[in-house]
Amino acid sequence: MNTYEEKLSLLTEMIAFAKIDGQIHDREFRFLAVVAQQLKVEPDVFESLFNQPAEKVVMKSEHQRILQFYRLALLMQADGVLHDNEQVAIREMGINMGLSPFAMKSVLVEMQRSPTGMIDPDMLLALFRAQQN
Image 1: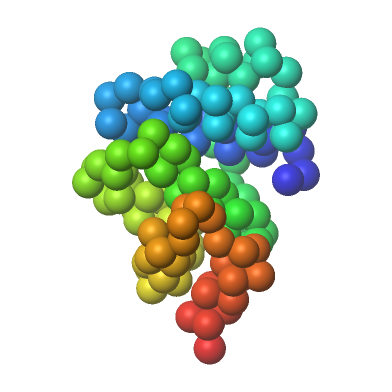
Image 2: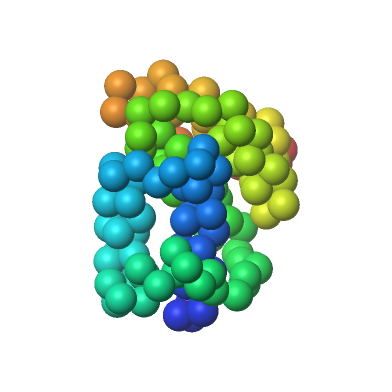
């Protein structure tokens, strides 16, 4: 992540995604707060994004877009409930990011198979690379 504006845009997108099912669950909020902390976004700025979203910045790097998709997938599972509208939204967001629908589906399947809901970063990248060939 290069700029502070990109970080705020990423968090804004994640917050919007968390709100898709009508509410932000406590575990989703905690997950978002951890991401904000990792991105070095101040707590007051992070909390302000819930009421005043940051301007959308398009990520140029495919690697960054893949990581963002994975963050969204982790967020989708944070509350322990997979809503249909979350699954539709994550696919639409991934397609808008220019990611392969087949790779996204493979990632979501692997995450469901995993007992922790997480997958190895090398596997994540391998699933996307497999669709490029």
